[in-house]
Length: 629
Image (cartoon, rainbow, N blue to C red; front, side, top):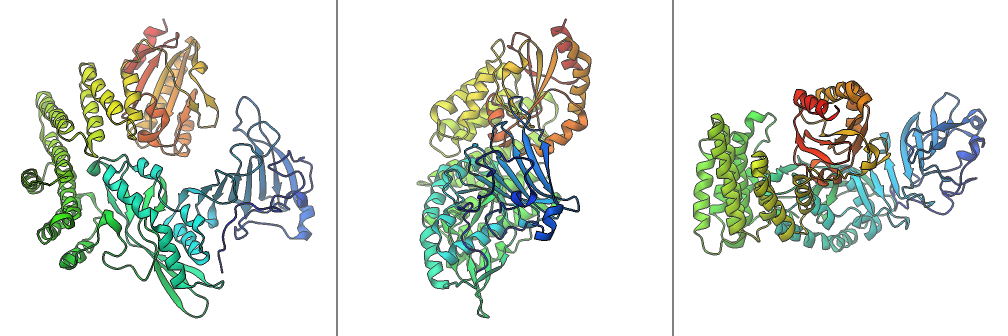
Protein backbone atom coordinates (compact mmCIF):
# COMPACT_ATOMS: atom_id res chain seq x y z
CA UNK A 1 0.00 0.00 0.00
CA UNK A 2 1.34 3.40 -0.96
CA UNK A 3 0.65 5.22 2.30
CA UNK A 4 0.95 3.40 5.62
CA UNK A 5 0.17 4.82 9.03
CA UNK A 6 2.44 7.77 9.61
CA UNK A 7 4.32 7.62 12.88
CA UNK A 8 5.93 11.01 13.05
CA UNK A 9 8.88 9.77 15.04
CA UNK A 10 10.17 6.37 16.04
CA UNK A 11 13.09 4.82 17.87
CA UNK A 12 16.07 4.77 15.58
CA UNK A 13 14.79 7.57 13.39
CA UNK A 14 16.52 10.09 15.66
CA UNK A 15 19.57 7.98 16.43
CA UNK A 16 22.43 10.07 15.06
CA UNK A 17 25.59 11.19 16.77
CA UNK A 18 24.63 14.10 19.08
CA UNK A 19 20.88 13.83 18.37
CA UNK A 20 19.49 17.12 17.13
CA UNK A 21 16.76 17.21 19.75
CA UNK A 22 18.66 15.75 22.68
CA UNK A 23 22.03 17.51 22.63
CA UNK A 24 24.06 20.08 20.79
CA UNK A 25 25.70 18.76 17.64
CA UNK A 26 29.30 19.81 17.13
CA UNK A 27 29.42 21.83 13.94
CA UNK A 28 32.64 20.16 12.91
CA UNK A 29 30.93 16.79 12.50
CA UNK A 30 31.36 14.91 9.27
CA UNK A 31 28.57 15.26 6.71
CA UNK A 32 27.77 11.54 6.74
CA UNK A 33 27.14 11.69 10.49
CA UNK A 34 24.72 14.59 10.16
CA UNK A 35 23.01 13.11 7.10
CA UNK A 36 22.39 9.86 8.97
CA UNK A 37 19.32 11.53 10.44
CA UNK A 38 16.22 10.62 8.40
CA UNK A 39 12.79 12.19 8.46
CA UNK A 40 9.72 10.21 9.30
CA UNK A 41 7.47 9.46 7.38
CA UNK A 42 9.74 7.62 5.00
CA UNK A 43 7.84 8.77 1.90
CA UNK A 44 8.91 12.41 2.32
CA UNK A 45 10.99 13.43 -0.68
CA UNK A 46 14.41 14.85 0.27
CA UNK A 47 17.86 14.94 -1.27
CA UNK A 48 20.46 12.56 0.16
CA UNK A 49 23.84 12.29 -1.60
CA UNK A 50 25.19 8.94 -2.70
CA UNK A 51 27.88 7.48 -0.37
CA UNK A 52 30.61 8.45 -2.85
CA UNK A 53 29.53 12.12 -2.65
CA UNK A 54 29.42 12.34 1.15
CA UNK A 55 33.06 13.32 1.51
CA UNK A 56 32.50 16.32 -0.78
CA UNK A 57 29.60 17.68 1.31
CA UNK A 58 30.31 20.50 3.77
CA UNK A 59 29.07 21.06 7.29
CA UNK A 60 29.10 24.75 8.23
CA UNK A 61 28.19 26.68 11.32
CA UNK A 62 25.54 29.38 10.82
CA UNK A 63 23.90 32.21 12.76
CA UNK A 64 20.13 32.41 12.85
CA UNK A 65 18.51 35.86 13.07
CA UNK A 66 15.38 34.90 14.99
CA UNK A 67 16.62 34.43 18.51
CA UNK A 68 14.89 35.41 21.75
CA UNK A 69 16.11 37.01 24.96
CA UNK A 70 18.97 38.67 23.14
CA UNK A 71 20.73 35.34 22.49
CA UNK A 72 22.13 34.70 19.03
CA UNK A 73 20.98 31.17 18.10
CA UNK A 74 23.44 28.60 16.88
CA UNK A 75 23.04 26.21 14.00
CA UNK A 76 24.64 24.25 11.25
CA UNK A 77 23.91 23.45 7.65
CA UNK A 78 24.98 20.73 5.27
CA UNK A 79 25.77 21.68 1.67
CA UNK A 80 26.17 19.28 -1.24
CA UNK A 81 29.07 19.39 -3.77
CA UNK A 82 27.01 21.69 -6.02
CA UNK A 83 26.55 24.21 -3.22
CA UNK A 84 22.89 23.34 -2.54
CA UNK A 85 21.40 23.00 0.92
CA UNK A 86 20.78 19.47 2.19
CA UNK A 87 19.99 19.94 5.89
CA UNK A 88 19.74 22.73 8.41
CA UNK A 89 19.76 22.41 12.22
CA UNK A 90 18.80 25.48 14.27
CA UNK A 91 18.65 26.25 17.98
CA UNK A 92 16.45 29.36 18.33
CA UNK A 93 16.43 29.30 22.14
CA UNK A 94 20.11 29.82 22.84
CA UNK A 95 20.22 26.52 24.69
CA UNK A 96 21.77 23.17 23.98
CA UNK A 97 19.19 21.59 21.70
CA UNK A 98 18.40 22.06 18.05
CA UNK A 99 14.67 22.67 17.86
CA UNK A 100 14.22 23.17 14.09
CA UNK A 101 15.47 20.61 11.59
CA UNK A 102 14.93 21.28 7.89
CA UNK A 103 15.35 18.85 4.98
CA UNK A 104 15.88 19.98 1.39
CA UNK A 105 15.16 18.66 -2.09
CA UNK A 106 17.30 20.07 -4.90
CA UNK A 107 18.32 22.93 -2.60
CA UNK A 108 14.72 23.86 -1.65
CA UNK A 109 13.27 23.09 1.79
CA UNK A 110 10.79 20.21 1.53
CA UNK A 111 10.17 19.08 5.13
CA UNK A 112 10.63 20.50 8.62
CA UNK A 113 10.50 19.14 12.15
CA UNK A 114 9.96 21.53 15.07
CA UNK A 115 10.42 21.02 18.79
CA UNK A 116 8.49 24.09 20.00
CA UNK A 117 8.81 23.26 23.69
CA UNK A 118 12.54 22.36 23.62
CA UNK A 119 11.69 19.02 25.21
CA UNK A 120 13.95 16.90 23.03
CA UNK A 121 11.18 15.58 20.76
CA UNK A 122 9.54 17.33 17.81
CA UNK A 123 5.88 18.27 18.14
CA UNK A 124 5.22 19.97 14.80
CA UNK A 125 5.82 18.82 11.24
CA UNK A 126 5.60 20.81 8.01
CA UNK A 127 5.57 19.63 4.40
CA UNK A 128 6.84 21.99 1.67
CA UNK A 129 7.34 22.05 -2.09
CA UNK A 130 6.62 18.82 -3.91
CA UNK A 131 5.76 17.16 -0.59
CA UNK A 132 2.64 19.29 -0.22
CA UNK A 133 1.39 21.90 2.21
CA UNK A 134 0.54 20.06 5.43
CA UNK A 135 1.35 21.38 8.88
CA UNK A 136 0.53 19.00 11.70
CA UNK A 137 1.13 18.81 15.43
CA UNK A 138 1.75 16.03 17.91
CA UNK A 139 1.00 18.00 21.07
CA UNK A 140 1.19 15.05 23.46
CA UNK A 141 4.29 13.66 21.69
CA UNK A 142 2.93 10.12 21.52
CA UNK A 143 4.18 9.63 17.98
CA UNK A 144 0.96 10.50 16.11
CA UNK A 145 -0.33 13.64 14.43
CA UNK A 146 -3.31 14.77 16.50
CA UNK A 147 -4.21 18.04 14.78
CA UNK A 148 -3.70 19.71 11.42
CA UNK A 149 -3.03 23.45 11.28
CA UNK A 150 -2.81 23.41 7.48
CA UNK A 151 -4.09 20.70 5.14
CA UNK A 152 -5.65 20.86 1.67
CA UNK A 153 -8.72 18.85 0.56
CA UNK A 154 -6.47 16.59 -1.52
CA UNK A 155 -4.23 15.90 1.47
CA UNK A 156 -7.29 15.27 3.66
CA UNK A 157 -8.43 12.67 1.16
CA UNK A 158 -4.99 11.01 1.19
CA UNK A 159 -4.98 10.85 4.97
CA UNK A 160 -8.57 9.56 4.95
CA UNK A 161 -7.65 6.89 2.41
CA UNK A 162 -4.81 5.73 4.66
CA UNK A 163 -7.11 5.70 7.70
CA UNK A 164 -9.75 3.64 5.87
CA UNK A 165 -7.17 1.23 4.46
CA UNK A 166 -5.69 0.49 7.89
CA UNK A 167 -8.74 1.09 10.13
CA UNK A 168 -6.74 3.79 11.90
CA UNK A 169 -9.18 5.68 14.14
CA UNK A 170 -6.52 8.04 15.45
CA UNK A 171 -5.60 9.13 11.94
CA UNK A 172 -9.25 9.86 11.23
CA UNK A 173 -9.70 11.76 14.49
CA UNK A 174 -6.90 14.15 13.55
CA UNK A 175 -8.93 15.09 10.47
CA UNK A 176 -12.26 15.68 12.22
CA UNK A 177 -13.66 19.10 13.05
CA UNK A 178 -13.47 19.87 16.77
CA UNK A 179 -15.49 22.00 19.12
CA UNK A 180 -12.67 24.55 19.12
CA UNK A 181 -12.77 24.64 15.30
CA UNK A 182 -16.50 25.32 15.38
CA UNK A 183 -15.95 28.17 17.83
CA UNK A 184 -13.36 29.70 15.50
CA UNK A 185 -15.96 29.94 12.72
CA UNK A 186 -18.58 31.21 15.16
CA UNK A 187 -21.42 28.98 13.99
CA UNK A 188 -24.75 29.46 15.76
CA UNK A 189 -25.21 27.09 18.70
CA UNK A 190 -27.91 25.03 17.02
CA UNK A 191 -25.85 24.39 13.90
CA UNK A 192 -22.71 23.84 15.97
CA UNK A 193 -24.46 21.11 17.97
CA UNK A 194 -25.58 19.40 14.77
CA UNK A 195 -22.06 19.34 13.39
CA UNK A 196 -20.67 17.97 16.66
CA UNK A 197 -23.25 15.16 16.63
CA UNK A 198 -22.37 14.29 13.05
CA UNK A 199 -18.66 14.18 13.83
CA UNK A 200 -19.23 11.69 16.66
CA UNK A 201 -20.49 9.17 14.09
CA UNK A 202 -17.49 9.53 11.78
CA UNK A 203 -15.43 6.70 13.30
CA UNK A 204 -18.28 4.21 12.96
CA UNK A 205 -18.77 5.26 9.34
CA UNK A 206 -15.07 4.81 8.67
CA UNK A 207 -15.06 1.28 10.11
CA UNK A 208 -18.10 0.33 8.03
CA UNK A 209 -16.49 1.80 4.91
CA UNK A 210 -13.24 -0.04 5.60
CA UNK A 211 -15.08 -3.35 6.05
CA UNK A 212 -16.98 -2.84 2.79
CA UNK A 213 -13.99 -1.80 0.65
CA UNK A 214 -11.43 -4.30 1.97
CA UNK A 215 -8.45 -2.34 0.68
CA UNK A 216 -5.29 -4.42 0.62
CA UNK A 217 -1.60 -3.60 0.85
CA UNK A 218 -1.45 -2.83 -2.88
CA UNK A 219 -4.23 -0.24 -2.81
CA UNK A 220 -3.28 3.27 -3.93
CA UNK A 221 -4.88 6.67 -3.67
CA UNK A 222 -5.38 7.99 -7.23
CA UNK A 223 -7.46 11.15 -7.26
CA UNK A 224 -9.94 13.34 -5.39
CA UNK A 225 -12.91 14.68 -7.31
CA UNK A 226 -14.48 17.86 -5.89
CA UNK A 227 -16.91 20.46 -7.06
CA UNK A 228 -16.62 24.15 -6.27
CA UNK A 229 -16.62 24.99 -2.55
CA UNK A 230 -19.78 26.62 -1.24
CA UNK A 231 -19.43 29.75 0.86
CA UNK A 232 -21.84 31.44 3.26
CA UNK A 233 -20.72 34.90 4.40
CA UNK A 234 -20.16 35.26 8.13
CA UNK A 235 -22.74 38.01 8.48
CA UNK A 236 -25.42 35.74 7.05
CA UNK A 237 -25.32 33.54 10.14
CA UNK A 238 -23.69 35.82 12.69
CA UNK A 239 -20.33 34.09 12.57
CA UNK A 240 -16.71 35.11 12.98
CA UNK A 241 -15.54 33.61 9.68
CA UNK A 242 -17.24 32.78 6.40
CA UNK A 243 -18.49 29.21 6.28
CA UNK A 244 -16.73 27.49 3.38
CA UNK A 245 -17.42 23.85 2.71
CA UNK A 246 -17.28 21.00 0.24
CA UNK A 247 -20.48 19.07 0.75
CA UNK A 248 -18.86 15.87 -0.45
CA UNK A 249 -16.00 14.51 -2.47
CA UNK A 250 -15.16 11.30 -4.31
CA UNK A 251 -11.87 9.47 -3.74
CA UNK A 252 -10.76 7.26 -6.61
CA UNK A 253 -8.77 4.23 -5.45
CA UNK A 254 -6.74 1.65 -7.35
CA UNK A 255 -7.22 -1.57 -5.38
CA UNK A 256 -4.13 -3.08 -7.00
CA UNK A 257 -6.02 -5.90 -8.71
CA UNK A 258 -6.98 -4.04 -11.89
CA UNK A 259 -10.10 -2.81 -10.12
CA UNK A 260 -11.03 0.74 -9.24
CA UNK A 261 -13.12 1.81 -6.29
CA UNK A 262 -14.73 5.07 -5.27
CA UNK A 263 -15.74 6.21 -1.82
CA UNK A 264 -17.03 9.46 -0.36
CA UNK A 265 -15.24 11.89 1.94
CA UNK A 266 -18.35 13.32 3.53
CA UNK A 267 -18.57 17.04 4.20
CA UNK A 268 -15.43 19.16 4.70
CA UNK A 269 -15.34 22.61 6.32
CA UNK A 270 -12.48 25.09 6.08
CA UNK A 271 -11.13 26.23 9.47
CA UNK A 272 -8.34 28.75 9.04
CA UNK A 273 -6.07 26.99 6.54
CA UNK A 274 -7.13 23.45 7.37
CA UNK A 275 -10.00 21.52 5.80
CA UNK A 276 -11.74 19.45 8.46
CA UNK A 277 -14.00 16.43 8.01
CA UNK A 278 -17.51 16.44 9.46
CA UNK A 279 -19.17 13.15 8.57
CA UNK A 280 -16.54 10.55 7.86
CA UNK A 281 -16.37 8.39 4.72
CA UNK A 282 -19.06 6.31 3.02
CA UNK A 283 -19.06 3.74 0.23
CA UNK A 284 -20.19 4.76 -3.23
CA UNK A 285 -20.25 7.83 -5.43
CA UNK A 286 -21.65 11.07 -3.98
CA UNK A 287 -25.09 11.74 -5.30
CA UNK A 288 -27.89 14.19 -4.81
CA UNK A 289 -28.23 14.86 -1.10
CA UNK A 290 -25.87 12.03 -0.21
CA UNK A 291 -24.13 12.25 3.11
CA UNK A 292 -24.88 15.90 3.62
CA UNK A 293 -25.92 15.37 7.21
CA UNK A 294 -28.28 17.43 9.28
CA UNK A 295 -26.84 20.86 8.66
CA UNK A 296 -27.32 20.77 4.89
CA UNK A 297 -30.33 18.46 5.19
CA UNK A 298 -31.30 15.34 3.35
CA UNK A 299 -33.27 16.20 0.23
CA UNK A 300 -36.93 15.11 0.38
CA UNK A 301 -37.87 13.20 -2.75
CA UNK A 302 -40.61 15.68 -3.59
CA UNK A 303 -38.04 18.46 -4.16
CA UNK A 304 -35.15 16.43 -5.61
CA UNK A 305 -35.73 17.84 -9.13
CA UNK A 306 -35.73 21.40 -7.74
CA UNK A 307 -32.53 20.91 -5.78
CA UNK A 308 -30.95 19.29 -8.82
CA UNK A 309 -31.62 22.54 -10.67
CA UNK A 310 -30.26 24.48 -7.70
CA UNK A 311 -26.90 22.73 -7.97
CA UNK A 312 -26.72 23.72 -11.62
CA UNK A 313 -27.05 27.47 -11.04
CA UNK A 314 -23.80 28.83 -12.39
CA UNK A 315 -21.56 30.42 -9.79
CA UNK A 316 -20.67 33.95 -10.94
CA UNK A 317 -17.12 34.88 -11.81
CA UNK A 318 -17.78 38.65 -11.80
CA UNK A 319 -19.12 40.68 -8.87
CA UNK A 320 -21.75 42.32 -11.04
CA UNK A 321 -23.38 38.91 -11.60
CA UNK A 322 -23.80 38.11 -7.90
CA UNK A 323 -27.28 39.62 -7.65
CA UNK A 324 -28.71 37.54 -10.49
CA UNK A 325 -27.06 34.43 -9.05
CA UNK A 326 -28.67 34.85 -5.64
CA UNK A 327 -32.04 35.70 -7.17
CA UNK A 328 -31.93 32.59 -9.37
CA UNK A 329 -31.28 30.49 -6.27
CA UNK A 330 -34.07 32.25 -4.38
CA UNK A 331 -36.59 31.45 -7.12
CA UNK A 332 -35.82 27.73 -6.94
CA UNK A 333 -35.78 27.76 -3.14
CA UNK A 334 -39.24 29.40 -3.13
CA UNK A 335 -40.49 26.29 -4.95
CA UNK A 336 -38.67 23.98 -2.53
CA UNK A 337 -40.22 25.72 0.48
CA UNK A 338 -43.69 25.56 -1.09
CA UNK A 339 -43.45 21.80 -1.50
CA UNK A 340 -42.21 21.03 2.04
CA UNK A 341 -43.54 21.59 5.54
CA UNK A 342 -42.61 21.36 9.21
CA UNK A 343 -39.04 20.49 10.21
CA UNK A 344 -38.38 19.25 6.68
CA UNK A 345 -38.99 22.76 5.39
CA UNK A 346 -36.73 24.68 7.79
CA UNK A 347 -33.32 24.21 6.10
CA UNK A 348 -34.68 25.27 2.72
CA UNK A 349 -36.49 28.23 4.24
CA UNK A 350 -33.24 29.39 5.85
CA UNK A 351 -31.41 29.00 2.56
CA UNK A 352 -34.15 31.08 0.91
CA UNK A 353 -33.71 33.81 3.52
CA UNK A 354 -29.95 33.75 2.98
CA UNK A 355 -30.34 33.97 -0.79
CA UNK A 356 -32.53 37.07 -0.63
CA UNK A 357 -30.28 38.66 2.02
CA UNK A 358 -27.19 38.05 -0.12
CA UNK A 359 -28.96 39.50 -3.15
CA UNK A 360 -29.75 42.74 -1.32
CA UNK A 361 -26.22 43.07 0.05
CA UNK A 362 -24.61 42.37 -3.34
CA UNK A 363 -26.57 45.20 -4.98
CA UNK A 364 -28.20 47.38 -2.32
CA UNK A 365 -28.69 50.32 -4.66
CA UNK A 366 -30.18 48.43 -7.60
CA UNK A 367 -32.32 45.89 -5.74
CA UNK A 368 -36.02 46.10 -6.55
CA UNK A 369 -37.21 42.60 -5.73
CA UNK A 370 -35.16 40.86 -3.06
CA UNK A 371 -35.83 43.14 -0.09
CA UNK A 372 -39.60 43.41 -0.69
CA UNK A 373 -39.81 39.62 -0.98
CA UNK A 374 -37.66 39.15 2.13
CA UNK A 375 -39.92 41.55 4.05
CA UNK A 376 -43.02 39.58 3.02
CA UNK A 377 -41.42 36.38 4.27
CA UNK A 378 -40.64 38.05 7.57
CA UNK A 379 -44.26 39.11 7.99
CA UNK A 380 -45.45 35.57 7.32
CA UNK A 381 -42.89 33.89 9.58
CA UNK A 382 -43.43 36.31 12.48
CA UNK A 383 -47.18 35.57 12.40
CA UNK A 384 -46.73 31.80 12.25
CA UNK A 385 -47.12 30.05 15.64
CA UNK A 386 -44.27 27.68 16.44
CA UNK A 387 -41.86 29.22 13.93
CA UNK A 388 -39.20 29.02 16.64
CA UNK A 389 -35.66 30.14 15.85
CA UNK A 390 -36.66 30.94 12.27
CA UNK A 391 -38.20 34.17 13.56
CA UNK A 392 -34.89 35.28 15.01
CA UNK A 393 -33.10 34.01 11.93
CA UNK A 394 -35.06 36.21 9.54
CA UNK A 395 -35.38 39.22 11.85
CA UNK A 396 -31.66 39.95 12.07
CA UNK A 397 -31.14 39.32 8.36
CA UNK A 398 -33.96 41.62 7.29
CA UNK A 399 -32.57 44.31 9.57
CA UNK A 400 -29.11 43.93 8.03
CA UNK A 401 -30.51 43.97 4.50
CA UNK A 402 -32.59 47.09 5.20
CA UNK A 403 -29.56 48.81 6.70
CA UNK A 404 -27.41 48.01 3.66
CA UNK A 405 -30.14 49.20 1.29
CA UNK A 406 -30.87 52.48 3.08
CA UNK A 407 -27.21 53.24 3.71
CA UNK A 408 -26.45 52.93 0.00
CA UNK A 409 -28.93 55.66 -0.89
CA UNK A 410 -28.45 57.97 2.11
CA UNK A 411 -27.55 61.54 1.14
CA UNK A 412 -25.91 63.91 3.55
CA UNK A 413 -24.80 63.57 7.12
CA UNK A 414 -28.26 63.97 8.66
CA UNK A 415 -29.78 61.19 6.52
CA UNK A 416 -26.81 58.93 7.26
CA UNK A 417 -27.28 59.48 11.01
CA UNK A 418 -30.99 58.70 10.69
CA UNK A 419 -30.27 55.38 8.93
CA UNK A 420 -27.66 54.57 11.54
CA UNK A 421 -30.05 55.34 14.40
CA UNK A 422 -32.68 53.03 12.90
CA UNK A 423 -30.09 50.25 12.65
CA UNK A 424 -29.25 50.65 16.33
CA UNK A 425 -32.93 50.54 17.26
CA UNK A 426 -33.42 47.34 15.28
CA UNK A 427 -30.43 45.72 16.99
CA UNK A 428 -31.65 46.82 20.44
CA UNK A 429 -35.05 45.33 19.64
CA UNK A 430 -33.56 42.07 18.42
CA UNK A 431 -31.46 41.58 21.54
CA UNK A 432 -34.52 42.29 23.72
CA UNK A 433 -36.88 40.01 21.79
CA UNK A 434 -34.49 37.13 21.07
CA UNK A 435 -32.01 36.93 23.98
CA UNK A 436 -31.48 33.18 23.58
CA UNK A 437 -31.09 33.20 19.80
CA UNK A 438 -27.70 32.05 18.43
CA UNK A 439 -27.43 35.43 16.69
CA UNK A 440 -27.86 37.48 19.90
CA UNK A 441 -24.14 37.82 20.80
CA UNK A 442 -23.28 38.97 17.29
CA UNK A 443 -26.18 41.44 17.37
CA UNK A 444 -24.77 42.90 20.59
CA UNK A 445 -21.35 43.22 19.00
CA UNK A 446 -22.85 44.98 15.98
CA UNK A 447 -24.81 47.24 18.30
CA UNK A 448 -21.68 48.23 20.21
CA UNK A 449 -19.83 48.97 16.96
CA UNK A 450 -22.80 51.04 15.74
CA UNK A 451 -22.58 53.14 18.91
CA UNK A 452 -18.83 53.57 18.42
CA UNK A 453 -19.51 55.16 15.03
CA UNK A 454 -20.93 58.10 16.98
CA UNK A 455 -17.53 58.77 18.54
CA UNK A 456 -17.35 59.53 22.24
CA UNK A 457 -21.06 60.43 22.24
CA UNK A 458 -21.71 56.73 21.75
CA UNK A 459 -19.31 55.49 24.43
CA UNK A 460 -22.00 54.78 27.02
CA UNK A 461 -24.14 52.76 24.61
CA UNK A 462 -21.14 50.86 23.25
CA UNK A 463 -19.85 50.07 26.73
CA UNK A 464 -23.28 48.81 27.83
CA UNK A 465 -23.55 46.50 24.80
CA UNK A 466 -20.01 45.15 25.21
CA UNK A 467 -20.57 44.52 28.92
CA UNK A 468 -23.87 42.75 28.28
CA UNK A 469 -22.15 40.49 25.76
CA UNK A 470 -19.40 39.51 28.20
CA UNK A 471 -21.86 39.11 31.08
CA UNK A 472 -24.68 37.20 29.36
CA UNK A 473 -22.60 35.16 26.88
CA UNK A 474 -19.27 34.60 28.67
CA UNK A 475 -18.39 31.43 26.72
CA UNK A 476 -19.12 32.94 23.30
CA UNK A 477 -16.07 33.54 21.05
CA UNK A 478 -16.92 37.27 20.89
CA UNK A 479 -16.87 37.73 24.68
CA UNK A 480 -13.09 38.16 24.88
CA UNK A 481 -13.09 40.85 22.21
CA UNK A 482 -15.98 42.63 23.91
CA UNK A 483 -14.09 42.66 27.23
CA UNK A 484 -11.07 44.13 25.46
CA UNK A 485 -13.26 46.80 23.87
CA UNK A 486 -14.52 47.88 27.30
CA UNK A 487 -10.88 48.19 28.40
CA UNK A 488 -10.13 50.32 25.32
CA UNK A 489 -13.08 52.64 25.92
CA UNK A 490 -11.79 53.29 29.45
CA UNK A 491 -8.09 53.30 28.57
CA UNK A 492 -7.27 57.00 28.42
CA UNK A 493 -5.27 57.91 31.50
CA UNK A 494 -4.71 54.23 32.28
CA UNK A 495 -1.45 52.26 31.86
CA UNK A 496 -1.03 50.81 28.40
CA UNK A 497 -0.85 47.01 28.53
CA UNK A 498 0.07 44.84 25.56
CA UNK A 499 2.29 41.80 25.23
CA UNK A 500 3.06 39.36 22.45
CA UNK A 501 5.66 38.41 19.87
CA UNK A 502 7.16 40.46 17.08
CA UNK A 503 7.31 39.30 13.47
CA UNK A 504 10.90 38.19 14.07
CA UNK A 505 9.83 36.01 17.03
CA UNK A 506 11.04 38.31 19.81
CA UNK A 507 8.94 38.88 22.91
CA UNK A 508 7.38 42.28 23.55
CA UNK A 509 5.76 43.92 26.57
CA UNK A 510 4.88 47.51 27.33
CA UNK A 511 8.13 47.72 29.30
CA UNK A 512 9.97 47.94 25.94
CA UNK A 513 8.56 51.45 25.36
CA UNK A 514 8.88 52.76 28.93
CA UNK A 515 9.89 56.42 29.08
CA UNK A 516 9.03 57.02 25.41
CA UNK A 517 6.05 58.42 23.53
CA UNK A 518 4.61 55.63 21.42
CA UNK A 519 2.29 55.46 18.43
CA UNK A 520 0.55 52.08 18.46
CA UNK A 521 -0.70 51.38 14.96
CA UNK A 522 -3.10 48.47 14.23
CA UNK A 523 -3.06 47.58 10.54
CA UNK A 524 -3.33 44.85 7.88
CA UNK A 525 -1.94 44.45 4.38
CA UNK A 526 -5.48 43.92 3.05
CA UNK A 527 -6.57 47.38 4.22
CA UNK A 528 -6.39 50.07 1.56
CA UNK A 529 -3.38 52.34 1.78
CA UNK A 530 -1.48 50.22 4.32
CA UNK A 531 1.88 50.70 2.59
CA UNK A 532 1.45 54.49 2.45
CA UNK A 533 0.43 54.63 6.12
CA UNK A 534 3.54 52.71 7.18
CA UNK A 535 5.71 55.00 5.07
CA UNK A 536 4.13 58.02 6.78
CA UNK A 537 4.90 56.46 10.16
CA UNK A 538 8.49 55.90 9.04
CA UNK A 539 8.76 59.61 8.19
CA UNK A 540 7.26 60.49 11.57
CA UNK A 541 9.70 58.22 13.39
CA UNK A 542 12.64 59.68 11.51
CA UNK A 543 11.60 63.21 12.42
CA UNK A 544 10.96 62.61 16.13
CA UNK A 545 12.84 59.49 17.26
CA UNK A 546 15.61 61.68 18.72
CA UNK A 547 12.98 63.28 20.97
CA UNK A 548 11.76 59.93 22.25
CA UNK A 549 9.17 58.71 19.74
CA UNK A 550 8.84 54.98 19.09
CA UNK A 551 6.49 53.14 16.74
CA UNK A 552 4.66 49.94 17.64
CA UNK A 553 2.73 48.30 14.82
CA UNK A 554 0.25 45.48 15.42
CA UNK A 555 -0.43 43.48 12.27
CA UNK A 556 -3.86 41.88 11.80
CA UNK A 557 -3.04 39.57 8.87
CA UNK A 558 -3.58 35.86 9.45
CA UNK A 559 0.12 35.26 8.83
CA UNK A 560 3.09 37.53 9.38
CA UNK A 561 4.84 36.79 6.07
CA UNK A 562 2.85 39.33 4.06
CA UNK A 563 3.41 42.04 6.66
CA UNK A 564 7.18 41.61 6.86
CA UNK A 565 7.72 42.66 3.25
CA UNK A 566 5.60 45.81 3.62
CA UNK A 567 7.42 46.78 6.82
CA UNK A 568 10.80 46.35 5.15
CA UNK A 569 9.75 48.36 2.12
CA UNK A 570 8.57 51.19 4.38
CA UNK A 571 11.91 51.01 6.26
CA UNK A 572 10.00 51.48 9.50
CA UNK A 573 11.99 50.98 12.73
CA UNK A 574 10.26 50.02 15.96
CA UNK A 575 8.39 47.01 17.28
CA UNK A 576 6.21 45.07 14.85
CA UNK A 577 3.83 42.65 16.57
CA UNK A 578 1.83 39.81 15.09
CA UNK A 579 -0.32 36.91 16.28
CA UNK A 580 -2.38 34.49 14.23
CA UNK A 581 -6.13 34.92 14.13
CA UNK A 582 -6.58 38.09 12.12
CA UNK A 583 -8.74 40.99 13.22
CA UNK A 584 -11.42 38.70 14.63
CA UNK A 585 -9.39 36.24 16.71
CA UNK A 586 -5.89 37.59 17.24
CA UNK A 587 -5.19 38.04 20.98
CA UNK A 588 -3.45 41.29 20.04
CA UNK A 589 -6.69 42.61 18.52
CA UNK A 590 -8.80 41.28 21.37
CA UNK A 591 -6.62 42.81 24.09
CA UNK A 592 -8.18 46.20 23.35
CA UNK A 593 -11.15 44.96 21.31
CA UNK A 594 -9.95 46.63 18.10
CA UNK A 595 -12.80 46.40 15.59
CA UNK A 596 -11.30 47.78 12.41
CA UNK A 597 -8.04 48.92 10.86
CA UNK A 598 -6.29 51.23 10.73
CA UNK A 599 -6.64 52.08 14.41
CA UNK A 600 -4.20 54.30 16.30
CA UNK A 601 -3.53 54.64 20.01
CA UNK A 602 -1.01 57.05 21.53
CA UNK A 603 0.91 56.27 24.71
CA UNK A 604 2.70 58.96 26.70
CA UNK A 605 6.13 58.86 28.32
CA UNK A 606 4.47 57.88 31.61
CA UNK A 607 3.21 54.66 30.01
CA UNK A 608 -0.43 55.78 30.04
CA UNK A 609 -2.81 55.99 27.08
CA UNK A 610 -3.14 59.57 25.85
CA UNK A 611 -5.51 58.94 22.95
CA UNK A 612 -7.34 55.64 22.37
CA UNK A 613 -8.55 56.52 18.89
CA UNK A 614 -6.21 58.96 17.21
CA UNK A 615 -6.40 60.25 13.67
CA UNK A 616 -3.57 59.79 11.19
CA UNK A 617 -1.82 62.17 8.83
CA UNK A 618 -1.15 65.76 9.86
CA UNK A 619 -3.47 65.45 12.86
CA UNK A 620 -1.28 62.69 14.29
CA UNK A 621 1.88 64.66 13.54
CA UNK A 622 0.56 67.73 15.35
CA UNK A 623 -0.47 65.67 18.37
CA UNK A 624 2.96 64.03 18.59
CA UNK A 625 4.69 67.43 18.33
CA UNK A 626 2.71 68.70 21.32
CA UNK A 627 3.48 65.63 23.40
CA UNK A 628 7.21 65.85 22.71
CA UNK A 629 7.61 69.51 23.57
